[in-house]
Length: 212
Image 1 (cartoon, rainbow, N blue to C red):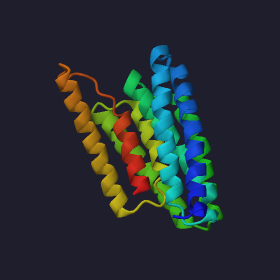
Image 2: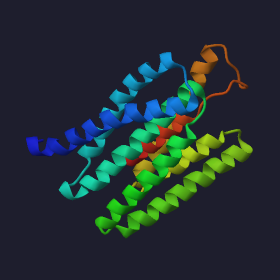
Image 3: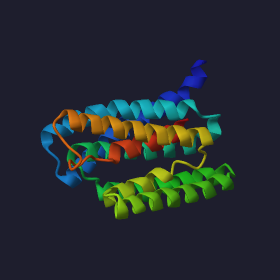
């Protein structure tokens, strides 16, 4: 990899490093989360935002993809922040999700249209609808929170260029994270009635699917 090849990944990593702590801080303020937790979350999200930005920039095929990659960095950092807030408070920041959905959805669609990729725009719409309906069914019949439905709607926006392999890996990652969370709950004395936040698993699943 040449110095030129590193420009986009490093630029996107910088954007992710800045955006993710800002998003999680906004989310925790909306949820009135404990102040002692906010600093630790911001540090963790700083690292995760940096990694997501670098990953997103690394899979670019050229300078023409800068607008799309920038939009995807914002999308991914919003997912990370919302999942982190859910992990701590077991609630998802609705205002952050609403703003992120409108902002990143518009940016992703505009970037795809600039590339002339109408097919990806259609896939984005289908993926968003499918993710929303799936979590809506889980909310209705399986005890998921309605915040998880909103998070899934945001997650679908990043799947316009997803591959079959990416989809399978994303679902696998979601299951693995859920199993790990369940094991941690049980090891801490919880049982099947103990509430477990789905936000982290949902966020990880969508990010893996988009990056694969």
